[in-house]
Length: 92
Image (cartoon, rainbow, N blue to C red; front, side, top):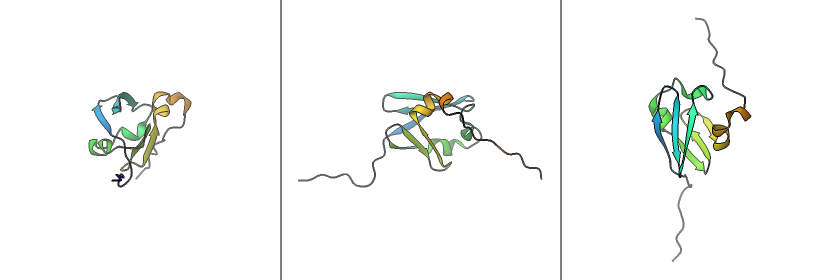
């Protein structure tokens, strides 16, 4: 008998906490903190959009509702990746 996985493989990732400072992700046996200061894309969005996270490959996280991709290295060492989203304020 030949068993073969159907569909694409997505690792399990879980948002374990959302605070006023950021988001905690649990992946495998590692917990990662995503600071709103370093990753402002998450600050003013709904909990539902933050909870909708996928890990298509180990260490790569994707929020489809926000079109945000991050990897473990950028989360653990944001200083190595200095580009941040700039919010534009437009007048009426």
